[in-house]
Length: 148
Image (cartoon, rainbow, N blue to C red):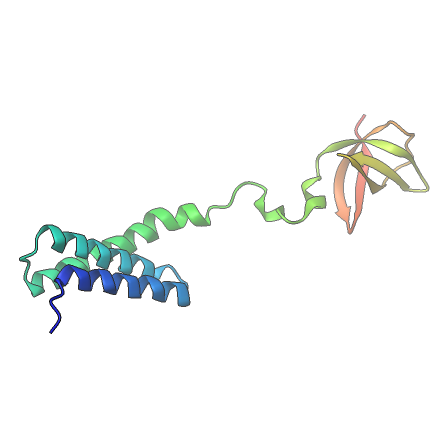
């Protein structure tokens, strides 16, 4: 029969659990898999440990790993950076920014230089070169007011 050390069985279990995490993501099996890997290391260092003690220690390690994730890592992962709620909405990121008009606002419409491009703007009549502040976004048009 096979002459497999018990710590190899824990590492195999760890690989199965972590592989299960890849198939069914949710961060739960990952931490239990890491606890199984830690059990393999413990048994490699202390080979004569009994089966009951292994089970209890595994349960403690799995619980500790899950609690560590839930209390320490998950809040850091879920914490969003300021302004990230507008991350993929470029125009909304411009609210509050100031730009120079590259085309006068006539009849409520004009253009402003934004970076290396130009955006349509809507607002009060203003001449070319006036500084405007973005107050809102309507589709691809920036709603502006005079920044002076």
